Length: 114
Image (cartoon, rainbow, N blue to C red; front, side):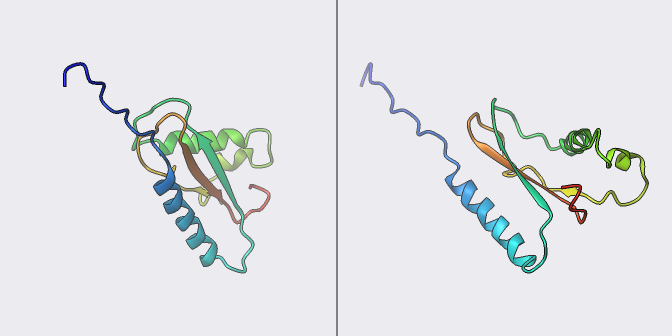
């Protein structure tokens, strides 16, 4: 048909992604059952479409170190050896679409760091 308007594309949803993320977090909780959990779960809302960057880890680590400025952990970056914190990939590991959410977990055996 000439002049017909194509149907609108459905709005993107996070339903499947959220279910997978929830499953992953439940698995983590099950593995550490009965142990004090020293984890910080950050939920990040995407403000602008962005392609997934495979090399973002160094920037993310720098961001975490910047959060430690003016804390007792400020010199953690300069020490050799284990840094006593780790962080997950930003989940889900796909291109970011405006309005969706991403999750990041930061963990440490030092409750003061978290």
